[in-house]
Length: 208
Image 1 (spheres, helix red, strand yellow):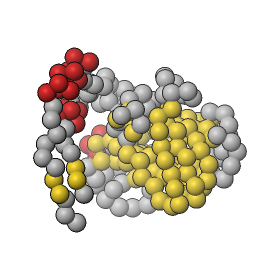
Image 2 (image 1 turned 180 degrees about the vertical axis):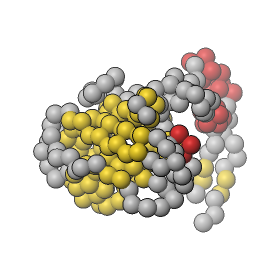
Image 3 (image 1 turned 90 degrees about the vertical axis):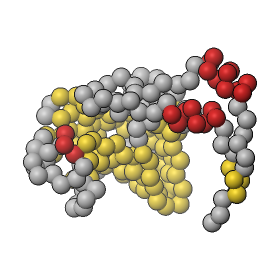
Image 4 (image 1 turned 60 degrees about the horizontal axis):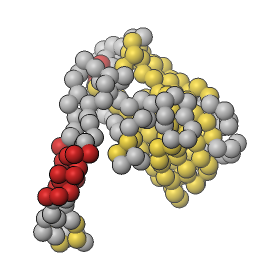
């Protein structure tokens, strides 16, 4: 397989995280995406027949965009993470808004997961609705929380399409993840300079 590496791609990768621990940015309203599709700060995994996810600029609960997911006989997980040191001995609350394209077979839950192991802490299953509905989960974690991070995930299974938006995370009642974006897009002038000078590097033949 041949891969062409462009200097523009290298620049986009280098405009990465400059996040301060004091003001975390978690893109909780899905306003920012990589190439306008994959939401920043968010991981999406799935299993089953098929699934896809995009950022939708037509339907949203808050702001200009929401996450729109379509699945067929599948299960998807939409992950955000919190550093473990912020979780130990704290009350964690996560909420978000969820709506379906139509009433169908989808089942949704919001869960907390310790990657080290153990059973996920889940909310009650939500029934599907074509109106925005709140989904939430809350739990008090012990001081000896053993992992370096806590995963917060919306899990949805079945067949259908849905939107997810306006996620909020509170740690001991205080909002978390609403800091300023920790990246910037290249300016028009920067792109023009790169386009005038960038040449593909030698193609690499990848083995295996």
